Length: 87
Ligand SMILES: [Zn+2]
Image (cartoon, rainbow, N blue to C red; front, side, top):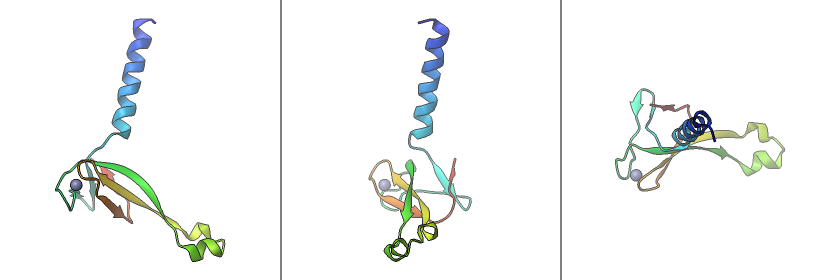
């Protein structure tokens, strides 16, 4: 493989890792720390705020998604019903 392509793939893998890896987040201008162990590295995810009544009535559009931050150290899941920023 030419060295240029090799470098590209290395960089690509690095960016992919950084985009998906744990990071620091803030909301409302305040840095988020784990409520359990005070760690500040989290994995970001989404969770549906699903209500069975809404699904039963076929009103899935009324279901909203929340941001979740899982502590990278102890695994405690923090739920946020607003936008959070990666810092
Ligand atoms: Zn924690």
